Length: 193
Image 1 (cartoon, one colour):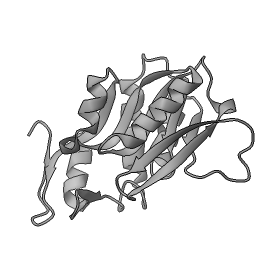
Image 2 (cartoon, one colour):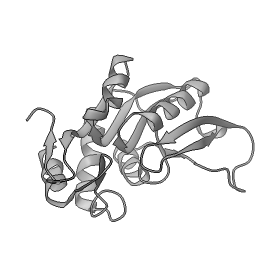
Image 3 (spheres, rainbow, N blue to C red):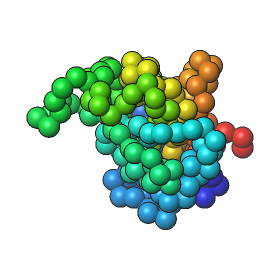
């Protein structure tokens, strides 16, 4: 999505440690028109995949996952990073290391929300090393459901997570793939440039 790449270049901020801050339009504050276009693009890309559920991990992936689920007319489910009082019964569980937060989360999805009959599209805002997606893929596998693929706003291609998932046979559709970024100059290069 060229418009997304232009938005990243104009408003994204490259921070030390391979962090790309896009809080002005993609996660803390959300550009709703851009969100709609990204959701429509994911719905188009996965139109023939038989998706019955969209799955994400809290919190930054929820907006795109909800919008994509709305476009696809299917339920959206999110994995919680912490057990809460309103989660009862049996759960699917996976450990996920967060690149951004530098910690490991024990993420959970109540078993009542995923079944072997589901075909799941996994959605997230960023893909770096693939830890969150691998955890969600494990949860889908544990439920007996199938993975239609993964839909990502921004993939940091230089960190290899997307390529590793693709090598395992997982379909990954990233709306923008950053090939390199420099915290000193702020220069961002996209795959294919």
